[in-house]
Image (tube, rainbow, N blue to C red):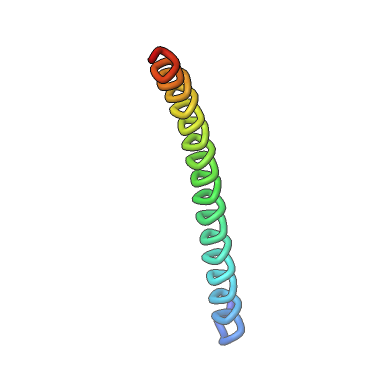
Length: 64
């Protein structure tokens, strides 16, 4: 049977910490991707609203 010494536990703890750090990085990368998509969508919607406003209000001011 394998003897479990202090080095074994230190290695186990080190591996656990590294795995946790990789999970945190993956989570943050996913959040960044989501935020980038959200910002791109908001920019697109804003452009659509501006276009609609220009089309509708330009016609009103010219009709007077």
